[in-house]
Length: 217
Image 1 (cartoon, rainbow, N blue to C red):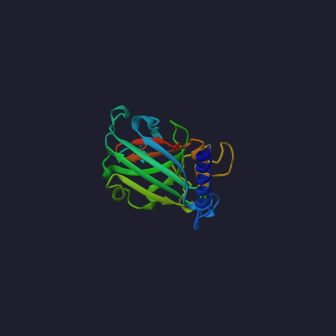
Image 2: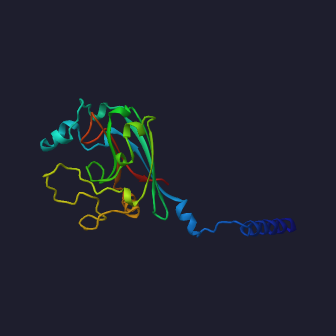
Image 3: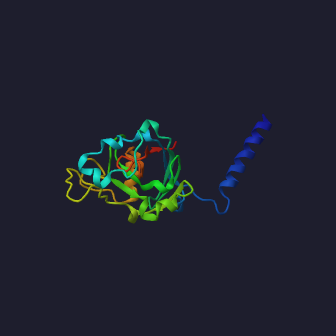
């Protein structure tokens, strides 16, 4: 019994000593907001695309159609993985992507959109704004850091094409406030309505492959 008591006393003393060490970062230290993250990821596949290239609405074929012959979703070998990390102070978002089965020279657009699975939604973050995608993804990987100023109020449709709903991402359906902060973007991620969409010369409208974002446990 004395040994057990002595051991417990020693452990308690050690815990107290460690907690009192100089330089210890408190759990509520504001600095942690810039170095800890809310993390989401997606696995991209053609099967998640909402339709085939042959199903493009006729008014959009000329402006948004593919410039190379397309391949049905079930026959494509393209795959991808993407991770999105929001700093807990919601000042920036870090994006890491890796793709396979796609020639970087064929990439024409790459975005994070808002929208439920299977449906096309507005663009929230356009990776093309950070430089030439062909060069940026030459190694089949992409890393981007974005802030509020980088979020897009997208114009996804040709001039003169009328929309019934706002073109940029709403905070809530039917609510007029549009997402224009990293905080709003993370809120949409928590709701499961953000997705990656990679567009190529073969699959420009619906996209080559798509990945809905889910929280990492």
